[in-house]
Amino acid sequence: MKNKMTKEEIRSEIKEWIIVLELAIILAVVLNMFIVVNAVIPSASMETTIMTGDRIFGNRLAYINSEPQRGDIIIFKFPDDEKQLFIKRVIGLPGETLMVRDGLVYINGSDTPLDEPYVNGEPFGDYGPVTIPEGGYFMMGDNRNNSADSRFWNNPFVYSDKILGKAFFRYFRKPGLIR
Image (cartoon, rainbow, N blue to C red; front, side, top):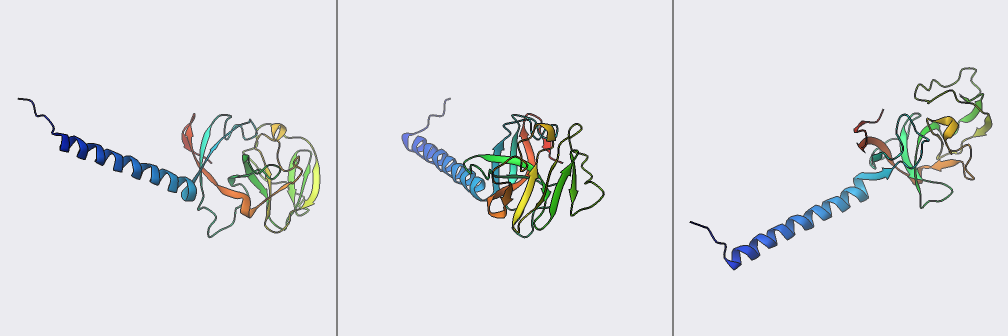
């Protein structure tokens, strides 16, 4: 014996599905506006840590009670064109003097370069010295020889108010936590 739905039951079922879809859309919008930022990796500048075409979630709440730390991978508005989102690693912090010599990064005149095991390949080149202003960060890609980063931008510093989030999860291509 078949169980036929009445018109009223069909309307009720449709109404319930519409409510579920509306709630899902509202939840997605709230998450995207206040909790996570979604970014697509457009270039090879962060390889092999993050590959071209990977999709990344960033935590918008990561820096509510703290400041970015050296080594953090962050998503931010590109200083030379804020319509573009960039993702790079924090290398220089506010108030520090940074210099790149023979591809190695030195902070505050240290004789010892930063320990950067994430750098892809043998970096080369010189830059600086440059003093990072308060509220500013100096960003570099892990693939230093193929990265358009703070060393090459017209506006070399990323300021706190342009940071959208700390990258924490790669959800497309090679899923996993970002280290």
